[in-house]
Image: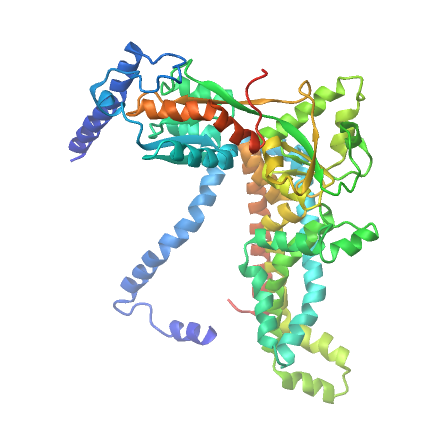
Length: 298
Length: 278
């Protein structure tokens, strides 16, 4: 009995491994061009017979794995895309980029991966499901200082963050934005425009290290805090209830978001059409509306 | 409870079928028992015990433990002082709307703690119903240790009120009346008759309140925020530690477990001695 069961498991495993290995083998022989021109979305990047059969049509479902911070913007883009290409349907899986990369490497049925940072895209590339060079930066995000709309502590400059008695709310350093916030303070401390004690003085004003960036946003918008540091995309969501103070680029941590097609999927033309749409002016306008910055200018 | 116990003991253990039923009861009881115990054991097994003392010595851990003990004790005292009159009112006075008040007291026990945190913020936050007038006088509660205590008290005090109400209601009022007839003042009756008789209920209610306050997380992180040394209690340190350093989270969790277990076991022992109920 035991041996029979083991044998069955072995056979199943072998089949699964073979199935996983096959498309990768075909990829390596004919990878798609690194930057396929938007003008030729119907170009078939792989030679597999099943791929060729469906790749010529821009219709059907497309599964997009996207970073959670893209939720609102990508849903708006999907609506516009589905209008532009009737018969298509975008299905999203929004989660933390690290979770998405892990799912993709586990073989999740994704067509497109949009990551909130480069390192998680690298994970998918190392996992063999995204071909190096096919990823493109489609948007960037940056930190801003926010205050409640009535600005109770009267903060107008970054130097004001050192004012004694200020109630500052930051994200905890377990959260990426919390690390970026500390990095901003450390960089500022090195500049003569701020003082050497800038970081320490500002950190002494912190009343709470929140466990996620949205809770920093909510507490500042509620007026519980005098100031906070969030992504510009978060700030855009509460534009009516907060004021923003820009953090200069040289002090800021600019997060680049890469997007790429998953290599072994049945409808690469549709995947490429979606990516092109995100990069095109219409997609970029939507992203800017939600507080992102366009990749141009880097 | 006691009658059924004495009824059981009159049954001869050697009666045929009893042993079989005994085994059946154990089998039926075991799955849930195992389910409740296995995760705790798993956590103990996972902890790197060698690092325990070193982790204990770090200031974050020591601060969290100290803060948790102080705030949960303060919350329990608040619940006792203000909960006893409320419980007495509910147990002894019959008035319109009593059921509504009783149900309102149940609410914090039923609500998710995050709701409690948002509600506290709406009431005592800087722009809140009571918080805004207080802020005029420069008093700000959110993000302070007072906020931690208030959050704990809000979710935990109902446990004391419920237990104390039941305790006061269960007292034979003739004993109080007899004392009063013998010339005891109302205060003496309460202090010498009512409280001693309701003691087991008051005591176990206080312990439940303390235990709930010690474990409070959701209301605290929303209303009091998270600042190591000021508002970061053990449950908050465990939650954030889980995202940063699993061993730190495990160490704190095991300490919290040990404190809770020791106190609960001690209390059960005390109660058994006092009341003589097994």
